[in-house]
Length: 635
Image (tube, rainbow, N blue to C red):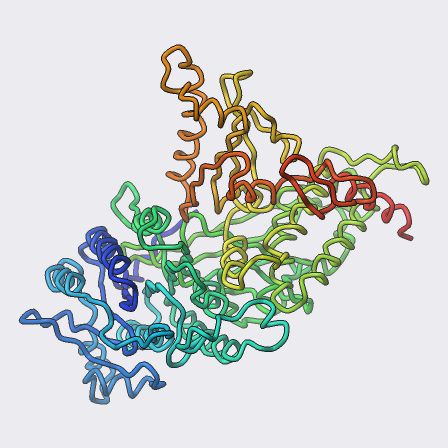
């Protein structure tokens, strides 16, 4: 049930664009074009501000129509709130007067459209010279801090969002992750492990500090990063995690991934309102015998400890209230609870939990959504009732979020061992088998897929850091803790569809190396990437021009079917995934082979080449054999 609170009216949504001008000229031109489209998609009543940055940051006065007027801030200087007020000319001791003065930097889109369009058109590459062998100097951290301070001055505890467009590494001022010398490479996992990441700890501390300030005021931070190299997402991820801001990455501002994702941010409801909410607060209420361990998602704890709270903390715990500065229809939070009393009260068959979510709608009205849930209770020894209520898909996603949260503080190998121990205990309790007879091992249908999910989770990019940059890991981990169960399962165990002459429709097939047959087309959906793979025979026929021959119309249809399905996936998903087409033996094929189960490995998991396939990973069968062995030996 959702209520519109009658006496609670917020301001229209506020957007502050923070734009990197250190990009190459062709990249900057594409970015300017996308910014123009984004401005046109804004509601007329929405308030908008504009900041550009290179070596210095520039805050634009949108109320000055005679010419472009901006206020410059040094990129290497740390400004406090009062210094920013003084620099912007917001003088005086009356808060209302200061707020009114700040609003010349935050104008309704309908009133400043001309001057804002002119500012974007006039953007040029940062004029500071870049010596040979050096990076452009980007004061990313200072620009974000100035934007958030501006919102804190003008609209504290109101629905606002900062949109950061960045095309390279933060290399100047507070929050820098690398210096401007190209000879000094951006930190890798090897550098982090050996404590050679010189700027990492200070940068993380800086961004976490401004993320906390933003979240406490209900302000969200979106990061739209387009660069071949790393930009510092690992250090900046707290901005997205704590404020619920969108996180989009691509190789270039020219890609459809960036352009279409940006457009989808401003998609509208049928009523014309933006499909986003602001400044949300969630309160969870439970019975006395159910305690709250915590929540994992894009939120921050409000530190409201009371009788509902458990002493055991998972994720953001020690509270029953959380803040989400940004919320939409796809926002998903995992809540973890604990039973204070393992045996339910006499004749009590159900327990209720209630969520109260108050948020600012994009129309400016404040709404309260109340969600009440009823759960069945069972005695600790009543296994059939537990089994009937078990949701293995939701359980796999909840465990994946927990594992990702633990991986921020623990080594990946320790998290994988923890996942293994929990899986062994679960199998020991719910599997049917006879001692010393492995072939009798059986899991009921409610649990049959769960070990398979854990197999793919432990070898996924969420826990494995080999051949993955810290920024990539930050991106993957941030998205899995905010997406719904269906999308999260795609990330853990991708979907694989087969297209062949044997069937007029695509057929789901096993995510296994055996599915890479010689006469099929495969479509792999990992959520982040949609890949179309042509087998050897399909590739040869295509190169021979059979698709252009009217006599082979069925072959042309076969080639078009996966492309149409892939385009439909891209159209419906946010963030927009990369769409890749490849064939047997080509480089992108590795993305498919890295995900499939290596079922054709040799005895004792010795490395064996199968066609173009070479791996050291264990197969699902070997994993299950060892799982059964350990479950039997567990006391």
